[in-house]
Length: 300
Image: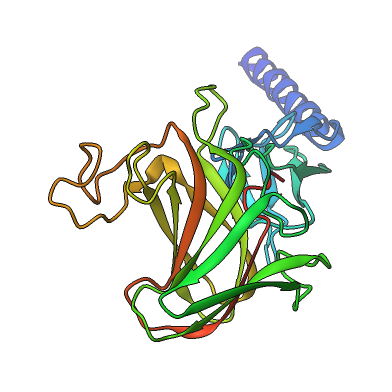
């Protein structure tokens, strides 16, 4: 009987000793190493959807801070992730990862959120900047007048001191607007895997309103079908607008069958060359005001 009791005591001592050794390992173990944020962009243009999937050797949990204004730390488990939306900004954001070990030792590291390169295709052979001779002429219609002036508002998306196109509308027509005839082609013919159909430009307005951009080769649609895209301007002054003609529709002709066999309003992706673009400011509405345009077709 004494032997049995003695054996139990020995087993208990060994078991307790192992627990002490295990606790010592937990308390004395190293902090996590090889911390990574594993940042992945889910789209190529702002606002950017960005997924963060933290990893580290020796970590059992993480705290993640997106670096966005007002952001707080979020607890993230192993093999978990968080997705954040980052706005367009002149400065990059930084994600902070805190890797936490079982003994609560922490390794902290920051990672820069670097947006992917803009996949810009130079659709305009010579962009319309109004500081050179690449514009043949410009014109207003239905109560709109245009002229080239010095940039009156060096802020927002266009802080440069340069010439811009001023558009003054009297509000007397439902489809006021203006056109710009180029000296060189507006070319949508690229079939490269990296080519896009986006026309980038800067537009100034202090009113929230829709803006419609259309491309023409000739007014009668004899060679290339007129195409158009409509976006909303935020009314904050100079804003960069990106008109994606991969989502264009055929422009209005008033003909029952449209033009070139393509009815009005039909989805169409341009693949040819154009020489003129037109813009309607708040099409269908009587809108009076002064607006400005610059850097049409400029790749960043």
